[in-house]
Every structure is written in C-alpha cells, then in structure tokens.
Amino acid sequence: MTERHEVPGPERATSEDAAAGEPTLAEDLLLLFQPDSGTIAGEGTLYYVLAGAVLADLGLAGQVRTGTGRLGSVTVAAVAEDPPTDRLFRASWEYVAERARGVQTVLAATGPTLREPLLARLVERGDVVRRSYKALGLFPATALKGGDNGRRDGLLAQVRAVLVDGVEPTPRLAALAALVYGSGTLPQFHRDIPWTSAVIARAEELKEGNWGAGAAAKAVTRTITATIVNNVVVAAAVLPRS
Image 1 (cartoon, rainbow, N blue to C red):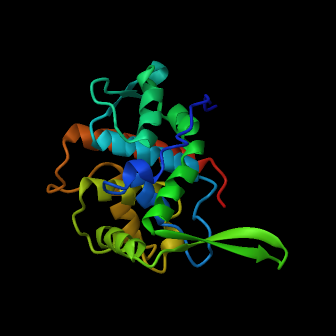
Image 2 (tube, rainbow, N blue to C red):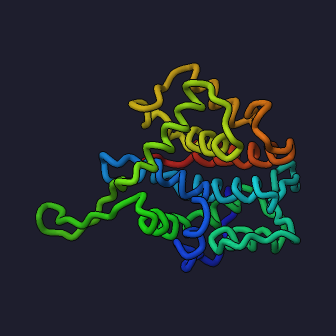
C-alpha cells in the first residue's frame, strides 16, 4: 500500500514564480489536455503524473537524487546544497529534504496540491482560457479551452516529432514524451500522434532513458529521470482512468 503523508500545498506558487522563466515540465504536461472536451485528459491519474513531472524537473536540474531503500524500494532525496527557487518545486523538494522517501510516497503526497496552481499559471500565460457557462441552462460551471497563442499546438508538434518522426529530443522533451506515455493517456492523442507499435517502441525507449547520443544530459540525470517516470507508470497502472 502506498504510504500517504500530508505535505504543505504550494498555494502561492502560481504565475509569480514562473512568469519570468520558461514553463515548467509539469505546466507543459498539464497543457496537453483535450481542448475539444473542455476537460483535462487523464484526470484519474493526473496528480501522480504532475508530481512525477515536478520530480523529473528537479532531477534534470540536479536538485534531487534517487537511491535504494529497504527491501529494494526506490527512494528520492533532495540535494541539500541546491534548493529550487520556484515555490511549487520548493514544496516537493522540502518534502524529500526532511529525509529520503519512497518515490511512490512522494507522488501520492505531493501530487494532489499541484493541479490548481499549475492551471493558474497556464491561464496567466494565456495558454489556457477558463470559460464560464450554465450546465443544463441552470448550474454555473467552468470549461477549459486552449488559448489563442498556439503554444499547445507547438508543444504537441514537438512531442509528435520525437515519437513519430524520430527526432532526437532535448532531455526535457524526452521526459515530457515519456511522462505522457507513462500516464496512460497517449492513446487519447491518436488524431495527432498515431497509436502504433513504432510509437510505442519509441516511447518505451524514452521511458527507459534512451534519449539518443545528442541529448546532452549526464548519465546520472537520465537514470534519475527514467526511474521517476517508471514509478509514474507503476502508479498510473493501478489507478482508475477518467
């Protein structure tokens, strides 16, 4: 059974931290939702996947490391001398700074607080628009749609290029494509990314950290990221999909 702990939520970690820099891996992952339906793809596994994206970003930045716990379980710990400045990342980093914890425990503890602050960042950037309407003509409701800045289309095209056309990815894009695959939602993108055996084989390579000779990430970074992504796969496999 996955151990659960309360972890402080990053309530103020919205666009204030991210506006001056590039979008985070977790933001990009959340942006790849289904705009035609007005909802987020893979809500049933979303919190695990977003937590995995935050850990992957921390891993790519060298701010966390993985290890082995009792009974051979995979643990993650903070690199004490290099805390992140982004408060959303800081909440996850501080959770593993207390002591090394199992990756599954970290995903379950830190994931539930991530969706809203990440969505707020996307809205602030103009990547996503919230639309209010009356459900059944009576009840106030909110739908989501892609913004007009084209960032989602551009991001999806990059993922497609990696998975379909075999373009060698950056480490960050490799992690993003692997997380989309690991979440179990990649078949929902069939219109843009065909669900074929070749695409599955390519995604499996990325999931295992085989990113290509030109993906300029140290071997240890690839190992950390692949370990985190594979733990997301394990978590997503046992959760209901919606």
